[in-house]
Image (cartoon, rainbow over all chains, first blue to last red; front, side):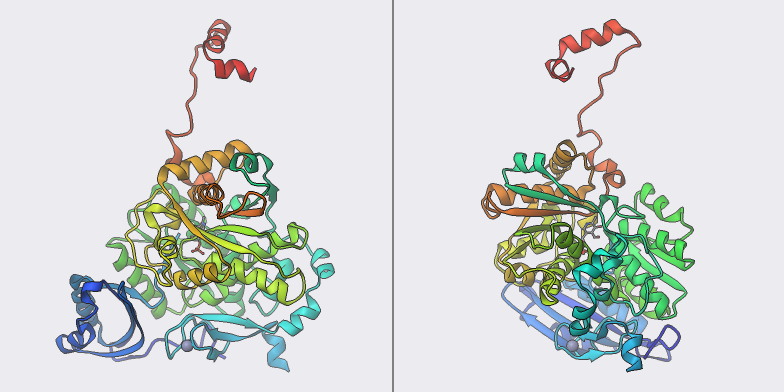
Length: 95
Length: 422
Ligand SMILES: Cc1ncc(COP(=O)(O)O)c(C=O)c1O
Ligand SMILES: [Zn+2]
């Protein structure tokens, strides 16, 4: 059993780390292949874990593998596009 | 089996999406679908150990239900938390037009005056069992205060991450306990993601991240207490304030568990959700009949409920659907009115989240979604002394006089309201 000392960290190899995110799309973006575009614009490996799409909202759970700087740039791009980007935990900040 | 004994009455961590099981470690998401993990218990063994008689023989704290709380041994942090008063609120009942009304008053929870002491004492007790020396959280108020205080009392080191625009009073309420308070400048979403990253990178017990499966279970104790204090029965309606939505799902779970182990008789009940209109992703979805929420940008005086993308929103919606419940939201003015109603009728000064709960209950009763002949419990989760700014200037005024009896008498004669009070 893992304890504090033998804690499992997220996959990291020489400065490369996996980031787990929820992307939430407004209706106007639902038909756009956002994840495909992202993987072509940035040096990141994408791995989709869960998807749910309705007329109202698109929700995608995604793992991004790559340099931290690439991942940060990819997140910036997504936000500029109008995608809400949350960590896999959603609201880490609570009251 | 030795392993079984070591884990107390817990069996495993279980994915809420796919049901895969994981060891009882400091982890919180499923490796396959990234679904949240939840603690699974051995109810057959619990049933034998946790009887009404056993519970009634134990000290009046939340730990009297410890078989149903996720620790392996005896609690070591927050041993005095919980068993707050359940107040029969007859005067408020009359004002709201309901037959039977109770207020579960966590405004006086020990030691930091909010229900968060419940979740934090569980998270820190479990953290010590798993060998952690440092605990952490990211918070804008109640959670930070509770982690700082309970960690101090337990001799644990603590890190508290806050957004840089937080009010001074809330910062002092954490700093005073000697916590390392890190204030982060930036957009809320950015700060939120950084906190997630820090939680993943440092080997701490981050109470609402890697310890979340244990942490969240602490909220069940509020529900257990309600059932015991009502004389071992389930209220027809419970109104619960929602931020992430976790508390609402755990109140429901607590009722189900008491039914499952035979401590209360099964009965139909509804767990209603309350939000401020300025941050209502869950109640808006419920009212629209959706089973998912759309993120919102919070703008409300109810800061403790201001979470625009609630982690347990999906599950809270599911619980309301399953129990045939409603959600509602109230404006800032209605929140203040709710605070005043509760204070004037019952002598309980709640924080803004309490105003939200009272305001929403009022709406649900007025519209018949809570029928006038039913029984209702309101979950009041935090203390009004923490959100004085929200009501300042809205709670009446002082009458000012010089040190003269004549002036006082003149004042009384000039105001019918004062004359009526003598
Ligand atoms: C006073 C108060 N009430 C209610 C809540 C709602 O809790 P949850 O996130 O479990 O929905 C919070 C959460 O921070 C709170 O601080
Ligand atoms: Zn899973």
